Amino acid sequence: MVHTTLEGGDPVKATTKPEAFKGGLAQGAGHALGLPALVLFGSMTGYGALAHDTGIGGGLAVLSTVLVWGLPGQIVMAELYAAGADLVAIAIAVAMANMRFFPMAVALLPTLGARSTPARLAQSHLMSATSWAFVMRTAAPEAKPARLGYHTGFAGTCMAIAATATAIGAYAAAELPKPFALSLLFINACFFLLLLADIRGRGALVAVATGVVAGIPINLAFPDTGLILTGIVGGTVGFLTSDKC
Amino acid sequence: MLTGFGIPLSAALAVSIAVVATFAWRALGALLTHRINTEGAVFRWFSLASYAVLAGLLTRLLILPTGGLASVDLTIRLGAAGIALAAFFLARRSLLAGIAAGTASFAAGALLLG
Image (tube, rainbow over all chains, first blue to last red; front, side, top):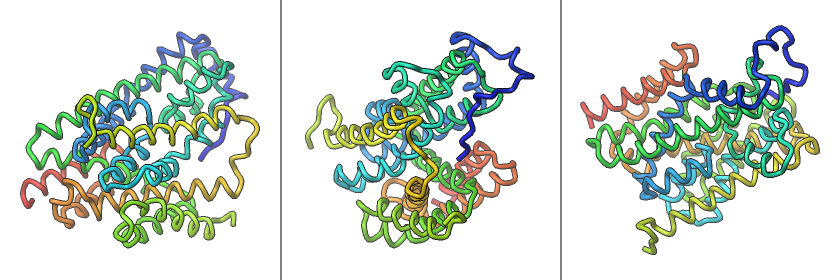
């Protein structure tokens, strides 16, 4: 993960960037309506279909998209719910899948300038992997009020698109002919396949390879705690083989 | 099954626990900012374990599905996954191209052979 901050800024482009909250808000919302919206729409449609398939239902699925707002954890939750896992197993597995939000919040929050605790918590909740990456780009605004606006506009737009896509996915999975409904479910597999195929670094690659291979017998033997065990085994093997170890 | 407003209670509890388990990380990061080193060994292990959980999730979705996907043959699932990977790299790591190609080829496979 990249841990750069933009405190220093880019003096050349600074004059063309918004300085105030409102300008940042509009720019962030606009930037969200590009490629990120399409990928988000597809992946959240897949999640809506999965929620329908597992019996969670469309209403609860939309609520979970807005309140969890982290697709890996949401899909872990739906998978384990369908497998009949207990709440402790679901909590641990979701926490493991979504723990990236901790270091991401640590890196992002100081660059937004949100002072009050409620504002900090609100921004940390809006944050997604995509919003984080966009606000940390050098093309994002540099003035803190504009950065706060940019993140709010970007992430808020993403969340609205995601909630809509979740509802559409749950509805479509119920109404479409079976091969097409199943294809919506397959979006989830494609999404994680490509996310993991894009990973760099020896430790992470070993962790992923170990997780995929060891995940087969582990998840067959332990449908409810299998994801936690896969995380522990893959994480440890990756850690022991990583460059820094 | 216990329900409220037509929603199974067990599903509502599963969603609630997922909300808490996710927001806890965000809140911790937002409140501890500046007082924590995220580059240490413990962090590295957790981050790698997180990747491995996602890898296990991929295995479950692709190789060991339990729901509707289980009704489609493994060869179709793996073939479509291969096409998704090929499209992703051919289109210079475009998530959109990969997902679209993988999902479309899965639909074709499910329609023709499923």
